Image 1 (cartoon, rainbow, N blue to C red):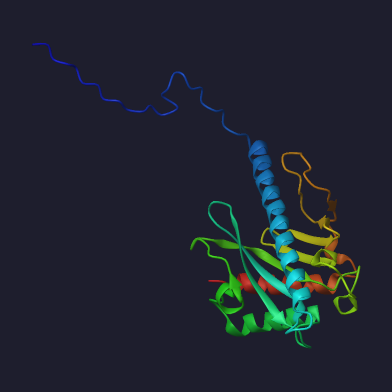
Image 2 (cartoon, rainbow, N blue to C red):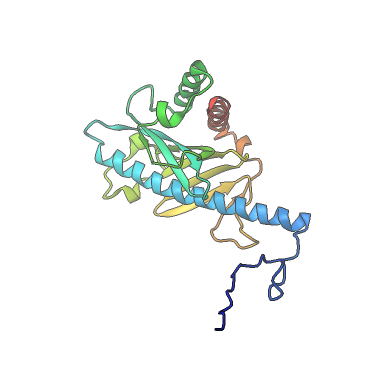
Length: 238
């Protein structure tokens, strides 16, 4: 009787496989370039999410203009899951003196966070809508949206056919120090950024590099208030 030999199949590691040539280790310069491309991809993804949020803000504001009107100003708290997916918790406010002036509103929100102290989670304490997200999601940044833009103040908006005709401006502050000033008007984006948006040397959308963006006298006070709220939330976040 002939015995049938048994064969144990075990996968070889890549470094043991003679048919696989191991990848050469990255140099410090290549690793830095890879990290910067990943960061640029994330910044572009943030802009894409903000655009959707801005369009919804304009739509809700227009729909409720004569019925429980909402403030022209809104905030979104940005998180990133371990997979890299961006998730958002947002706060819309009813129109009124305390919500319709952007800089004082941001100061009031900062005071609320400061008074609460350590353990303040804006997804729970400050949002009126939060997407479901991985428990390991981490803080990515703050997006402040306003319908009061250089193109037109919200209060001066006349009859418009659709929310696409409502200009929207965003001040975005990310945890890596990036500031993005984004204007949405007539379905077109205009972007100014303090950090790179080109991925692996490829420019996927028009944008303007403005390292001194926060020094612009027209927006300096807004940026100071945005930075203060961002930093306060990050400092007290659980």
